[in-house]
Amino acid sequence: MNTNRLSENITAALNAQMTKEAHASQTYLSYAAWADREGFGGIANFLFKHAQEERNHMMKILEYILKRGGQVEVTAIPAPPENPSSLNNCFEKIFEHEVENTKGVYKVVKMSSDEEDWATWNFMQWFVKEQIEEETLVMNLLDKIKIAGGEKISSDILYSFDRDMEKISGDVTAARDVTTINP
Image (cartoon, rainbow, N blue to C red):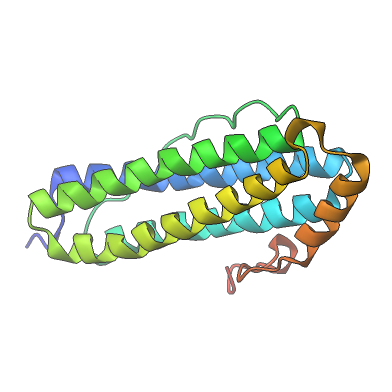
């Protein structure tokens, strides 16, 4: 008996979004390593935590596909983009990446609506809300960087900004505290 409750199109779209979330995780991870190497420990910590958050999003989609009886396809993810050229550029690239991720979420939402797959439509509303939060967070950080001078931000302000970023904890467990039991 076939217990799969997802169409082939929805399954493919969910698997594609799962890969986008994995790519987002790798991008944040790459930028976190860049920030750490540049001496921005607070910013690196913030980005490392977001890398874990994106991985959690990937796992949320994977689990949903399995719960609906679908076939999960784990595929290769693209390499992260080149390292940023500056702190301003880093957050501009992150914003662009989040906007692309939002487009992927909207594609699944529209497809689930068109197919009247209300379970998937409902599931994806969590991601719609999450993407609003993600884009707003990055826009607010870009605004702060812009006010501080954008590409011409002074080292004193960079130091202060990095310390402020260190204080942003978020709800994501630090990578060093993650286990297979507590992902």
